[in-house]
Structure formats: structure tokens, C-alpha cells
Length: 406
Ligand SMILES: [Zn+2]
Image (cartoon, rainbow, N blue to C red; front, top):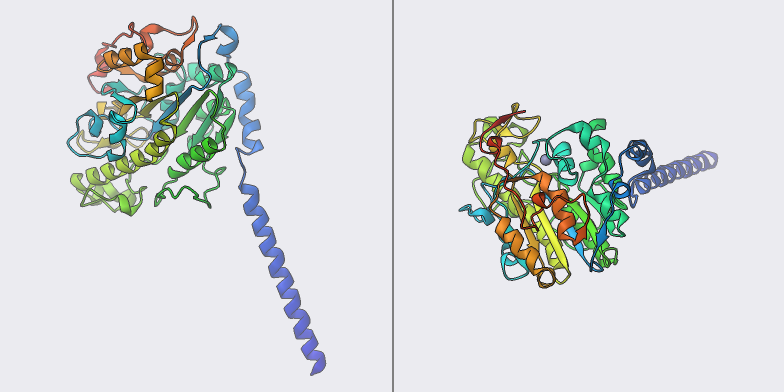
């Protein structure tokens, strides 16, 4: 009996030991995922492609003036179209978190006629950061983006995304563009176990971690000096419109059918859920705006592409939708927000943006606008494509006013 009891003790001890070893292994595995930035394997894979790209900062001269504490931010929204966007006059108040930034804190100038060049995320976002006037994937893949230009001028550069890096496979041109930034974060590299800023967390989407990471870096002093930062969302009001927390379900009734939303929800339910998603997105981006309100800051908010909500006979965007790039999928919710400090120092640019705000434009203006509005001078900057210039030309191509085949 005594002998048997010892065997039981030894077996129990062994069991405990194996259990502890498994737990340690699991914790180690989990911790190795908790990287601060992108993992080296991913970087190595795409660095080679990046190295072959034409570096505009080496080919052109750039002169910068009075930029010591300038903060330039692209708030990249997802699937948010211009028509149902409260700042553009939409009757539903779906962006209440932006209200105070209209006139009370800095100034917001809406861009109701800004169009994306594509309607799928990776290529549409690549166009927001490169200088090409028309869509051409080979061009995007051949040249570095505006991030490298800012980087070469001593700006702190960061690309903080809820998941832009993981979508689109190898053909995703964003994978190399993101690497141009000094700091890159995606949903795997942001520690989302902690939410020290008490940000309302999405139910199914991780957009909230982009704002979380921005706030962390800002408070760590990473953007104290001149900086160019991309804060990028992936979920937003993307179909099936269920990425936001339930507490943001202000507009009722909602569509709760998940991926079967087209078959199981009315247009009204889909639109309500879409509006709730837009509201949550505005809440997340407002946290960034609140943080930088006292800085010399200029922010461009723009969605990568729009969205079909059933009203044009289609649902979704890009690859999910038909091969038509309808206006709804290209006319994107957009605005420029400037802090009081930026406006004081750049009165002419503020006036020019206001004067230009009603023009018909595409995302191809952003490259030139970022640089020009940051008081950078260079032959590469086309004033006809800068919101901060008196020379900005409205694009009068017919395709902006009608649905266009891809
Ligand atoms: Zn998208």
C-alpha cells in the first residue's frame, strides 16, 4: 500500500511538472507574438522589393521651412462614402464625435467631391500615398511613397494600422509602402491585452488598436518633433457592419445577420448598421484629434474607397461587388482639419483649402497636398494638385460624374 501511494505521488508530481512545462511553453509562444513592431521575417520578405523602388527623396531636392513641431496625419478611414457623411450635409447625425472639431477646436474643411482611384483597399490606399494621377499598379510598385520623402527630411514617420499589412496577399502594394515608415504596427504587433486609455473596443474589428497605439506613442514623446503619421482603419463601417461595440447601436433597427446581410436585412437595417459603424469610426479618430489639438497639426481624413449600400443595385465594394466602380464606391468621405496653431502660422494655406474644398478631385492630390501643406518646397510638387495652393485644378473628367467600369 505504502509503495503504491508513493507511485501515485510521483505520478501526480510528474503530471504537475508536465502541466507547468506546457503552460510555460504557451506563455513563451504568446509573448513571442507580442512584438513591438512587425516581425523580422515579414520585413525581410518585402524589404528586397522596397529596395528596388525608385527613391524620390534622392532624385529631387527638397527644401523645408519652419517645421520643427509640425504634425501631419493621414486618418485613413474604411468604406465610408461621401453621401451619407454628416459633415457633408447628410441628415443623419452619424459623426457626433467630429462636431467640436468643425469650428470650436481648430477648423474642419469638408471635401465632398474627393474620389478614390480604386475600390479595393490595398491599391486604393497605395494611391493615397503615392503620386500617380491614374491607376497603374506597376507605377505604384516602382516608386516609393510620400512617407520616404518625409523620412528623408527628418520627420518621425509611423504607419499604424489595424491590419493593412495582412490583407491582399503578395500583390498588396501597401506591404512595401508601410515599410517605408520608421515605425510600423499592425494588429499582431500591437499589445491589445492592455487598454490603458479605456477605448471602447469593437466587437469583431480591431480598429480601436490603431488609436490606442497612436495615443501610446504620442504620450511616449515619439511625435514631439516634426512627424508624419498614418493611422489606418480596416473595419470601420465595412460590411457586414458589425465591427462596432453594441453601445454604438444608436440607429435602429440594425442588421445583425453577419455575412448573410444581403439576404436577411432590409436596406434600412443595413443603412442603420452602416451609420453606427461610421459613428464608431468617428469616435476612434476623434481620440487622435483630441490628443493633438494644441499642436501645430494638419490632418487629412479620407476613406480608402466608398461603399454600395443596395441603393445602386450593389452591396459592398471592390472585389466583393460587381466590376463597376460606382460613384458610391469612389466618392469618399473626406475632410482637412487644421489646429488653431497651424492656422495661425499658415493663414494662406487655410484660406486656399477653403477655396478649393468644392472642387472635383481624386486621391492623386494627396501626395502633393501633404508636402505643400507641410511647407516643403520641391520641383516634384505639382501646385495644380495641392489643396494648399491657389493653383489647384478641378478635375473635369466625365468619369467622375458617372459610374465607370474597371
Ligand atoms: Zn477598404
